[in-house]
Amino acid sequence: MADSTMQQHPLAGWNKPELDLSTADWRSSSEGRGDVEIAFVEGFVAMRNARRPDSPSLIFTPAEWGAFVHSAREGEFDLT
Image 1 (cartoon, helix red, strand yellow):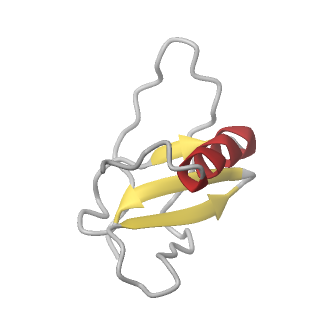
Image 2: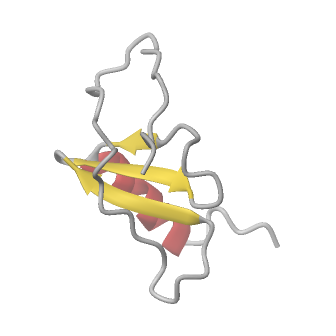
């Protein structure tokens, strides 16, 4: 498999390490129909576009991921 990470450029205030995602165990929804995959790597949560796995991944701390999941469950991101 090709390297699934692209060169990452640190942002101001970026306090997350560069993670090797090439061997990450990517998972999609329980039904496998989503365009989003996540992987748990070195204490962080990585998220990527399943249709473009070579595109950059988003990296979340556990606290950031928890806040995102909580907000999603509360309907904060509903578009209807």
